[in-house]
Image (cartoon, rainbow, N blue to C red; front, top):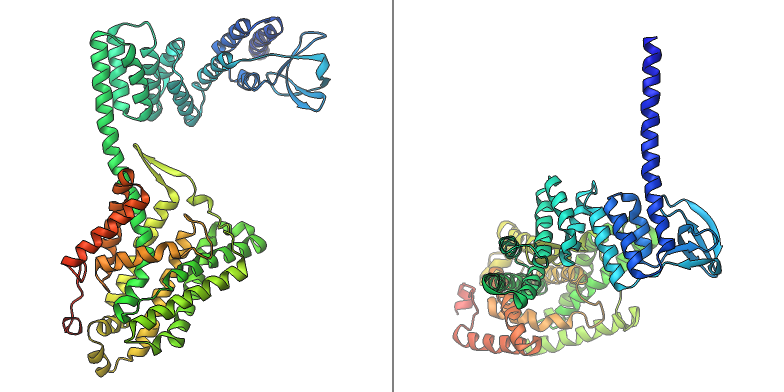
Length: 538
């Protein structure tokens, strides 16, 4: 008997549970059925608010469909469906569970109409529904939506969500959304003062807009508090803008460093003004394009690794072309700077035309791997992943090159040739091969610079021309042949450019930088970091 009682009790509990669930769904369906009787926007809005007040996630898809104009009422029996139009027919689905419900002709249905005011009500209702989501990211998005579209009617729902929130970042956003709603409500001065403090702490452009709008209509102490908060946010945003310009300058400086560092080596060791250096960058970019095309055709699943494959390939291609140029042309022109300049300029034209003949004159699409897409928000500082990757890559290349120059036998020979070529030759160093390999190294580094720069610029036959003048400016400003001088020069010119652009424009900003460099060179002809050595001193 005891066992039988337990079985009966369990059955009663299950039945009661099922009955409650059915009753809840039945209540929802009664609310959904009210759409059939709603004859105007106000009546539809009332139904939307009732559904939102239930807090049931099951109505989310229904409200989304209504907002998009996809909610229908069947004329024959006033049944409500979510529908997808296909020609003259509509594919019907259950408004709560999404189950297929057949097909109906458009003539047999009437669409539940919406306007902009109703869409705002639906958006707020959806925000209230997602506040109770189990996913913190969904709750965070809902809080942001409610912050940007504040509604005093949502304060009660926000209070409930704040009380039950255990994720600090989400709770902070919910409090900010509540503060924005309080500023539009009829609550007292104390509540609005607290709301002003909350928005002032947020200190971004959205908070500034909310407070500025409130400041224009507020009176007395509230107006003064809002004005002080607006002034404080302006100051903080100005500081963030300075930080943003510094980041843009570092980003530009890393680009200049990548383009100039190979030129600094060849110019410093060999004294060769290589006008084809930009074309080495261009060859690296086109090598990236060819590698990506091959991967797309042969192994599309490896596309995320395409840049890793392109880097050594670009180094080898550009380095081999640089070695051929040095052995075939430049070694016969040492000590004749004008002829060297003209010869390398001719080589640059030949390389441009060769690439134009092979690949065509139009821009080529170089893809960006997914891990380099998007951006990182650090306070009010926006950092794109592709620029961050280029900065890190630039620093890695610079560190590796410093190690080669300071810690390897070849680097020692390069520095010896740079400081005193005749003494280096008398010590048994084969200076012609040091020149050749140095030129190949500088060209190879330009090639891998092209891989990185292909992620932020259009790849075309003229790709390298946009960097050659800036590269020479960096090398001359930093000190010919000095890697640290090149680094400091690139970063200094990059940051200076980005601070001048807002006031003078991009073109005039570059002209000002060029004039400043000319004036600087008048005082320090050897640049920031003059190279030391007996040959140089002589």
